[in-house]
Each structure stands twice: as C-alpha cells, then as structure tokens.
Figure 1 (cartoon, protein in one colour):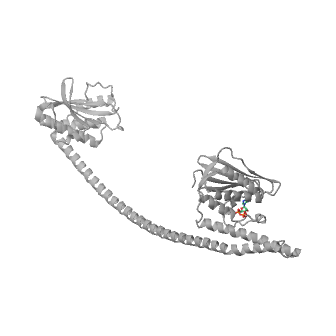
Figure 2: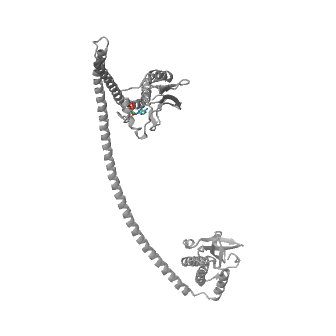
Figure 3: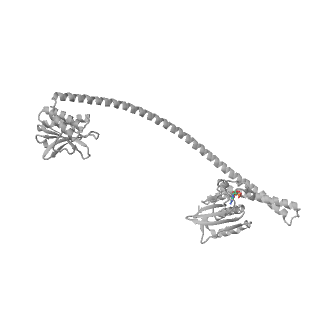
Length: 453
Ligand code: ADP
C-alpha cells in the first residue's frame, strides 16, 4: 500500500454547491469503511468532512477534495482528506465554525504542499484492521466511479439512522454508568463497614495491650520490692549471724589453745569439727553479705588508674597457697609492657581470685591459667582451666544464686561466687562470659572498658 503513488488519490471530488456537501459526506464514510475504520470512526470522519466542506463553501466558494491512504511514521495507516479551497483562506487560516470538529479526527490543519494550500484532516486506522491491498483499492476506485452518489435525502436518512444509533449508544452507556455507580456505592458501603469493624477490633486490642502493660508495670514493681526485701533480709541475717559465728570460732580456738586445759583426743576432734563448720558458716555468711551489698547497689566502685602487673603478682602469691595439687599448675601469665586500665583494683582482684579459685577447686590435673590482653578500648581477662568443663545448658544456671552442678558440691563452696563475680563485673561496666563444654575445660572471660565504667 505504501507503494501506492502519493499523487494518485483514492478518490477526487469537487465541492461547488450545497448538494456536494452530502455527497462528500457519503463518499467520505464509504472511503473510511474501505480502509478499515470502525463504524464510529466512519461517522466521525464523515461528520468532520461535511462540517469543513460547509465552512469552505461559505468562505471560499468551494474546494477540490481528495482522499489518500498514507503510511504514518508509526508504521500504521492513516486516512487523509485534503480540501483545496477555490479561493485563498481568510488570513491563510482555517477556523472551523464548530470547535468540536477537530475532536472528531486525529489532525486538522492547514498545510501547503507543492504550492497548494489545503485544509487537511487525518484519522489513524486501527492496528487490527486488515491492510487494504493495492488491488482492493483499485477495485474500490472503479466501484466508486461506477456508482452514482445518493441524493441529499438518502444521506439525510442515513444521517438520521446514525444519530438514532448514537443516541441509543449514549443511553445504554448512561444506564451502564448508573449500574456501575450503584455497584461502586455498594462496594464503598462494604469497605466502610469493614473499616469500622477493623477500627473497633484495633481499639479493642489496644485496650487489651494497655491493660497488659499496666499489669506488667505492677508486676515489675512487685518484683523490685520483693528483690529489695530479699537483699535487706540477707544483709540483716548475715550481719546478725556473723557475730555469734565469729564468737564460736574464737571459743574453739581458746579451747584448743595450749594454755587451756588439755582436751581428750575425742574432745579435740569434736572442737576441730565445730571450728571448721563455723569457718564454713562464716564464709557463707560473708559471701551472702557481699552479694546482698552488691545487689542493693551499696558497693561504689573506687575507680583509679590500675597497673595490672603488681595486681597479677599479688594474685600469683595469694593463690599459690590454694594450688595444693601437684598435678595442677597455676599460671598467671606475665604482662609485657605497661598494662594500665581505669577500674576498681580491689573488686577486679576479687573477681579474678574467685575465678582462679574455682579453677583450682574443680581441676584435678593440668593447669589453671590467667591471661590478659587488650582489644581496642577493652581489656580481656581469660581464666581457663583443664577441669571437667560445663555443659552448655548449665552456662546460665551456674550464675544463679546457690546453684552448684550436682557432683561438684563435694569440693565445698556455696554457689554464690559466680553470681557475685558477675554483679561486680557489671558494676565495673564490663561483662563476664563462659565458654565451655563438658570434658573440655572452661574459660571464663571478663571484659572491661579500658577507660572505666
Ligand atoms: P561455688 O564455687 O561456691 O560452688 P560458684 O558460684 O563459684 O559457687 O560456682 C557455681 C558452680 O559452677 C560450682 O558449684 C560448679 O559446679 C560450677 N563451676 C564453677 N566454676 C567451675 C569451673 N572452673 N569448672 C567446672 N565447674 C565450675
């Protein structure tokens, strides 16, 4: 179809008298149908043609009309109608009488081609329309040449039919719109009801959550009070117990003193038993007191610049006395270079002594080792041993008060050392963690900020 010479129009007609307007309208519709425009578009093109023809007959006394089929830049076919006026257009411009005309077609403009000024309109052929073959166009040309155009009356009848069809279409569209509107209103009502229901449910849930929070607050206040009462009780009882227990130990010492009256062997053994039991009790009382103090927040760390080297020397000295098994070696690693950190020296000493003491208590052969290392802005202390190790499921439990792993009790102790150590480390702004597995020894790691809590 693009091979169709541009100069050879599909159809040419003359617009000279009023009657021609009907003919142009009729032929325009037929051409539109042949190139594949839909029924509605055929009516649009025909109406636009008759409007422009009427305008030109009035302003320029007539025009030569030609129809063409072009291939557009978008690869689609366009039906083009050129109306070349017989006299120049006023001001070389074309202003349609009815502004709606330009909306009936895709383009409506004044163009000048090869010195001829034409009013040109075009309408795109739908993509799904079968492309008219050159043969079909030639056939159509002949057909048009043969048939005589209908009269104005015929065209008026057709036009009336089209108008009725258009009115029908408008009415059915309006009915459809009314149904759609009703459906939309229905949906809106449903959405609104759902929204209200959801809002209500949300409010209900919110009320529940608020009540739950209030209950939680109350419970945690109760817990706080209970914990404070427990600490106060522990502190008071321990304090009250300390004096009589110390007195028992003193009396025992007096009884076995060489200056006192000699005791029988049996009496001596029994007094020794009383003394050692009282010493155990005093130990327990002291630990309870320490823990109660740490829990009640009455321990205020005395933070100073601490050099770890003398502290380690001290630990080496005091713990050697506890390392009584020849099969277990106590290693406090040497610190090379200055090892300074801001903390409470006494509390840190207590924590490390406690961990090393545990290591020595539970390890039957191998070694117990303390090593310190600096990582960024923290100091890390690892107390490791080659003892029995601790199963992962007990890693949290051994930090609970009075918890001792079954079987471990025979080496003595109270089950208060680790919870106390963890409290102190927390007070110093650090953490105490355990890495261990059963049968593989244990490593307790204390991590403290170099700059203090
Ligand atoms: P205590 O040593 O007075 O019993 P702790 O609170 O210090 O109390 O320790 C709690 C329990 O954790 C101990 O009874 C022991 O079962 C276990 N435990 C602590 N340290 C070690 C260790 N180095 N190796 C194996 N078990 C340990």
